[in-house]
Length: 126
Image (cartoon, rainbow, N blue to C red):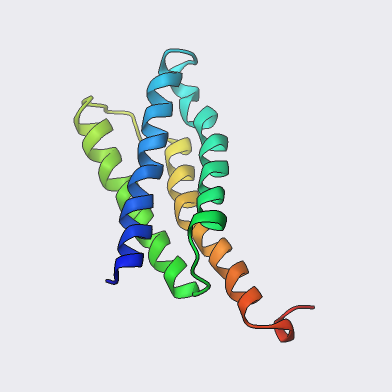
C-alpha cells in the first residue's frame, strides 16, 4: 500500500469516523438515541463529499474502490470496539447504522467513478 493510499484510506477514514463519533456524543444530549444516526448522517455525508472532492486528489477508480473498502472496514471495526463493546450496546445495529455503512462504501465509488470519467477526456462525456 503506497503512502497516499495509506493517508487517504486510514487517515481520512479514521478522521471521518471520529467526526461522526464526536457528533454522536454531542447529539446524544440533544435528540432521542434512536434519532442520533439520522441527525448525524446528513452532516457526515456533506463532510465526506467535501473530503472526497477537495482532499482526495486521485483520478483512479481503483484508488476510490480501495478507499470504499478501507473506510467501511474502519467504520465497522471502530464502531464495534468503541460503541458496541465499550458501551455494551445490545441494540446498536439498526437501519441508520446499515445505511451509514452502505453510504461509507458507495460515496467513494460514486465520486471515484465521476472523477475517473472526467480524467478520460471528452470521448466518455455526452
